[in-house]
Image (spheres, one colour):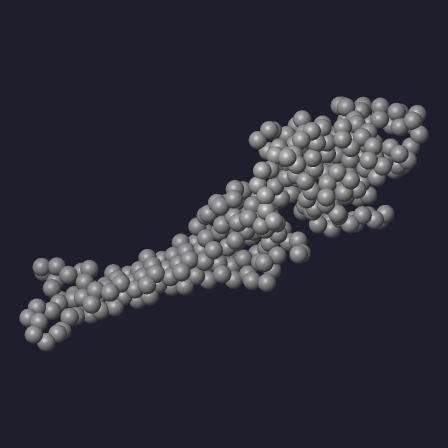
Length: 345
């Protein structure tokens, strides 16, 4: 399944049905009179969060969603049929934006959440509704209200507990592959990761979700490289894991590059808790590694951990540091092999 995190959608709710102008005329019925029914209500356009989706790829093949209009009223006081509601099924974490791509209409973060994006028009009154003592034979009826037509954007922000940050080839995908069952593409060239990957990692009988996004480069907020369009996927994370490649020529400069991009992106992303890790320590000798860690701690103003994702050195300690920054309500308790009493053939 291809990954798609931004889609433009055109929606239109149904118009209400027109009211009917009708009179009762039957043999042997002394009293007739108006009996035109009301029109049916137009269908709504609703967005709903469903389980089992993690991409907006369905909206690449269908961008127009038009609800049906209500049926017109009929004689014998019959009301027209209401139009069917159209439901846009989206994954959890989807933001619904107005046409300007800035105004947030709804933030669909919880499973089962439903929001009406375009309300259907009300049906018009039939001439039966206008009957009165002074107007016993009304020959007028109301038309149905028109539906609402609008253009919206759907933007997916993955819901993860921890997010990976770093330059291309900093070792983010290698770390995800070493600590979870996720199998992202790993290669020795930049921009191996072209779309976000999710993995469930476990430590100390708890599990949480880690998001790996494509690497940033200097000027990403201006659209260079893959740009910062994927930073939205770590906005919902409780903690950020900043991986710094210790084998590059300018380690301190690489660290500041990511921090500057976070600050240029805006929002509260730069203020989130961060765990800074010096990666690829298996390719460095002990003395150089200690000097590099000390320089990085001075630049970051905090503690710097050491790790090698490829050799799986220090990964457990890093996971524990991430777990300490995540609220208990977000993690899941890992079940042991004997805890599940249910048996199925």
